Length: 120
Image (cartoon, rainbow, N blue to C red):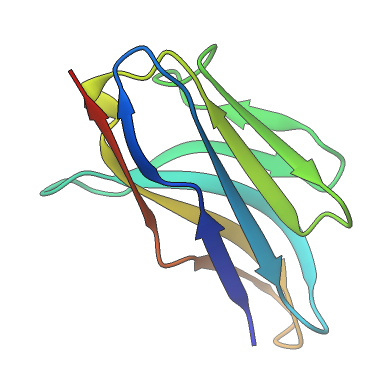
C-alpha cells in the first residue's frame, strides 16, 4: 500500500523560511519521481517541483530561486526548503510520487497535505 506522509507545515512570517518533508512508502514498487504540489481555496492543484531518482530537479517559475527540492536517503524521502515566503504562498502543500508498482505502469499518488500559512 502506497503511503505519503508529509510534515513541517505551520505558520511563518512573510520573508521567512519553512521546510517540508515527506516520507514515501511503496512496498514492492519503484518510486520514480517525488515532488510537491500546492492548492489554495478555489484553485486547481499547482505543480511546484519534482525530483527524479537521479536527483534531477525541476521547478515551477513561481518558486524557482526560492524553493529547493531534494531527495534523500534511499530515495524515499523528499524535502522542500522554502525561503522568501510570501502571503501568496499560503496553501495546502501536497507530497507527490510517480510510482511503478505491481500494476505494471506509472501511477500518481498524493499525500494528505500540510497547511502552510504565511502571515504579513
